[in-house]
Image (cartoon, rainbow, N blue to C red; front, side, top):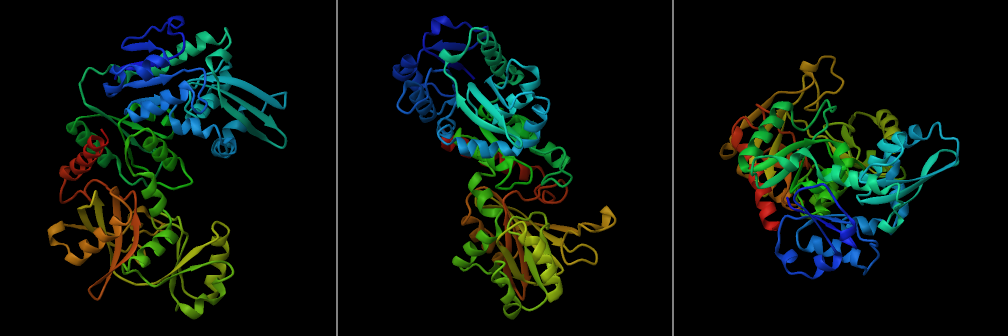
Amino acid sequence: MPKLIVVEKPESWKFNLEDVEVISPDKYLSEESYQSIKRLKVINLCKSYNYQSEGYYVSLLAEARGHKVLPGVSTIQDFRFPSILREDSLDFDELIQSTFKNEPYDRVEFSIYFGSTQAEHLNKLALQLFQLVQAPSIRASFSKKNKWLLHSIKPMSLNEVSQTDKPLLITSLEKYLLRKRDFRPDKKKYDLAILVNPEDKNPPSDDRALKRFYKAALEAGFNTEFITKNDFHQIIQYDALFIRETTNVNHHTFRFAKKAESLGLAVIDDAESILKCTNKVYLHELLNAHKILTPKSHVITEESCQSLPSKMAFPFILKQPDGAFSKGVFKINDLEEFKKIRESMFEKSDLLIAQEFLPTTFDWRVGVVDDQVIYVCKYFMATKHWQIVNWNANKRASRDGEVESISVDQAPTELLKTALKATSLIGKSLYGVDMKEIDGKFYVIEINDNPNIDAGIEDKILKDRLYSIIMEVFLNKIKAEK
């Protein structure tokens, strides 16, 4: 991908890079040739990103032209709300405390250039801050009262870069641009990142399925790489992001989705789908508002929970709003159990969902992507358990229930119709709709935004074609954006 470095006085900057042009902001903003070129990577090193400045317009017009730009407009806007950035830094509080544990002073300030800084012991934190705030040069300060906290973080203009730091800026920029993937000999058209968590013991896709996704992506024409949460700063390189780890709003997966969308990437799961699907309170209201059949449910608070037993017979199901993979879900058999379990659950959430217990031998799961059904499965209950997964099972073999995959054309018509109606309320991403069948009627239990796709299970009918369909959806999303 061709690269532009936009900087005042470009004649003063020399870089040892091929396929890189150094130009002035005026040239980038005014010359027609840069308006028509596609797939440019733009590094905006202008002296100011203030609203209405040339630096601001370089990033704004770069995004309008479909160029990948650093920093993006959303990053520039983030600097206007330092309290939000300080709050986000709490996600890596442990790293902050360990970095400064031997610091003799109660305030530290340092400069960061593309994730690097002069002090070796600060580089890990510097990279984390660059991942949080994707701007070429930033100045961060930390202060300590009871503990170390991010005091401020702001962009630096080139005028503020000291002569001693200038070589670091240049080498860091070159290192940032000179990654092995930029020199691949193949001519794949688009770049896909698949976000995974190697440490997750229960990921949405197993290793064999991930390999099949990788193979399908290559066949579809993608340069494909697996990335982890530590690669946040690299999102700008890609055309598409596929999230294959358990998602949540208060989680790095949501930040990855938001950042990728702000950079114009095609994203599955998109941030809106994560937001909607991971909260059962929202889903309860959404499905009821659109008259989609669900088990009888009540949203309860600590104040209103006392009256629940008069509205719902035992046993019933009590759920945390953001539980996943059958976790945070309890079967309540009597009043004493209700009092005990709700107390611990209210410590994590102000709202809970109480849901009618509908005993069945299996749950339906319908996989949907971009308004098309790609698989149908029956998930049977775990041995001697009321859920499809028994997390308390002593043996791994008895933890999960059996799974039966069936052809889409053999599935009940009403099942498919209900699944498509439910997912249409969320978006056009990848979903798994869990349903129970009672007397020929289909009740939606929940909609998952990152459903399981494991080798030999969800892909049993379509096999490699299932993975190809998802890659085709990515291609269509990218082409629509272009």
